[in-house]
Length: 323
Image 1 (cartoon, helix red, strand yellow):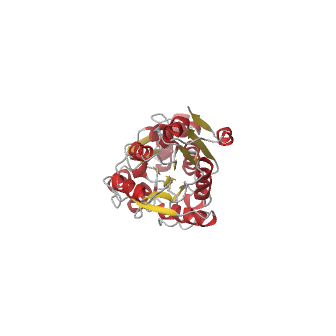
Image 2 (cartoon, one colour):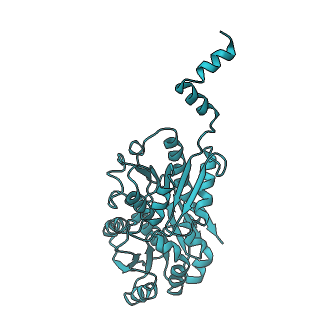
Image 3 (cartoon, helix red, strand yellow):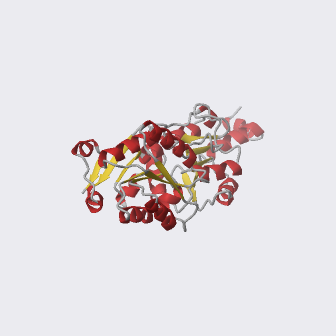
């Protein structure tokens, strides 16, 4: 039988037509939803860089759909990503992760899950997250104690220690507070919690901190606090309080010092998980990763401004010193 006749016969077969169509169709480009609680800003750029490091270039072999403004209890942005039929949703913190969880039980969710994803109801456990969610957490049990010890190094008297926090936060503030309370008991330090419920509460919170006679300050991690970091740093400096913050960005904004996980490393780990899921891994089988690297950053300019001397031993240990 001639070749042309054979091809003509094969062309009548459905299986052959499907094979030819698949061979001629371009490979599907994965779509990744990026969900954050505020304007993506530098978050999306770091995310793009992390994906590129594992072989995915936005606009070439992957498409990133960024959405933001995830108010607590609201899921519209996440639902929009679900309607776009993205392959994975990446999140930056607890609130967007919860929004994504409400929006889908099938699309894999990977990313920042806040300080205590178990208490937030995102995963069953860190080792076995279950369902369709995995990623990284931003805290460790010893973090509160380490921050108190660093404060003790820069000020002879730090007690009472004011703790700026959001009692109703889904971002793990209660988890962080429990760690600090345990460490304070071990170090015989008095804590002075200063609650914030919204953007209008910062001035009154710092007024209460001053009236309570606090001698130092710890700021817990929260998306609201990150957004308002310049305001918080300004109020702490005005009060001349030695303060330690939950992220390097506070020190860049003029804060005294921070001891925090390496945010870039967390994003890189998220990118690795995304790569593994796109290649067939299931989120339920990928343990939630705790931070493995923490960085100490000190601002000498602020230290001088509030009358604090940073010990040379601390400066030698610091990962970065702002002059």
